[in-house]
Structure formats: C-alpha cells, structure tokens
Amino acid sequence: MNALSPLALIPQGQELWIILIVILVLFGGKKIPELLRGVGRGVGELQKGLEEGRKNLEKAVHEETEKKPTSEP
Image (cartoon, rainbow, N blue to C red; front, side, top):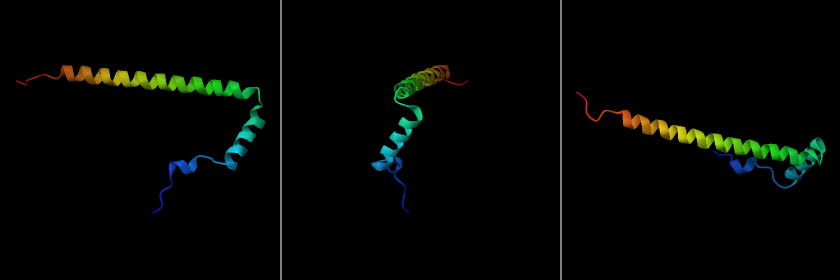
C-alpha cells in the first residue's frame, strides 16, 4: 500500500502561483490585507478558545479527583 503523505496535499511550484493569482483576481489587492487580518483574528480566537477549554478540562479533572472518597465503608 502506498500511503498519501500530508505534505503531498500542499500546493507547490506552479500550483501555488496559480492559486495566488486567482486569489488576487477574485479579491483584489486592497481586500487581501483585510482578508488576512480576519484570518489572523480567527486563528487568535481559536487559540484562545482551545486554551480556555484545556484549562476547564484540567479544572474539572482536578475537582473530580478531589471528590473521590479515600476509603469506602
């Protein structure tokens, strides 16, 4: 079996240039910085949400381990 490498899915060379030209034509030069700014904010929000979820999970696990009785009757 020949497994497909995840790196094979990343456009390279001519494919990358074609994608960049299509994006430039579709959005225009003035909209690209605004678009990238929005993507950056989205990534920031995602990271903040992941960190908050991790903290909540750790807190819940810590609280659950404290609730366990040390000896049963």
